[in-house]
Length: 296
Image (cartoon, rainbow, N blue to C red; front, side, top):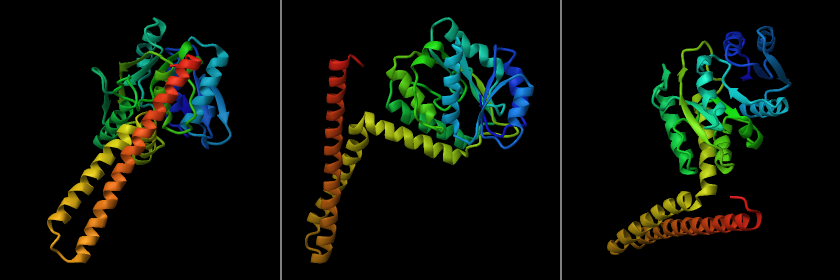
């Protein structure tokens, strides 16, 4: 589990987790409090970062260490007490029976939920999840849950670059590309813990949503650029027709509205053309990669 200044909760979480797993590994991500010492005293193996690298940086270190240990499975959960350690066996069951490579403790499948979950956070997660699902075919309902489990196969194949919270989406994108089987398992996540996430809902949401939109623009440029392009072109056309109908107005007004209609329409056409070109280039590159390297 990643740890950053969680001295109030880390001890309890470590001891409860040890009831279900063989070993607990804590990545102390530059904490300035006693988190690392408490985790060690409670039986965890602690790996320290000299500086705070972020959630993604902590998981990179965790994955590297798990591969070196040649583990059968890895469970990742938060150290602030939000996740119920009693659900660890539920996440591990599909991994151990071979029916899944990657499981997610989900708040939004039947049986899952969030106690005292703020409405704005629920809305934000829904928006991020919907955006993410436009760029992949996994159909995950809770892309932002940090309660996850991975098989040895997933640990060996998954690779990610993000250092921040956007890792949650990058990991799913990579899982689909590597043809890993992802399954959601119901869990209840608490929001009444003494010290919640170190990330504010706004900063977390903005960072992750930005990554999702960038990913979507790379995978479906026609959707991201083409639809706004059509909208702008239609707006420009409507403005042009309005100018034509009011041609009897003064010349200044005619020129001003007419020029606005022209540049809005041209911008729309440019976006549509860019979307078509990028979609074509992506399809061509995918075809070449499959044909010459056998990678799909």
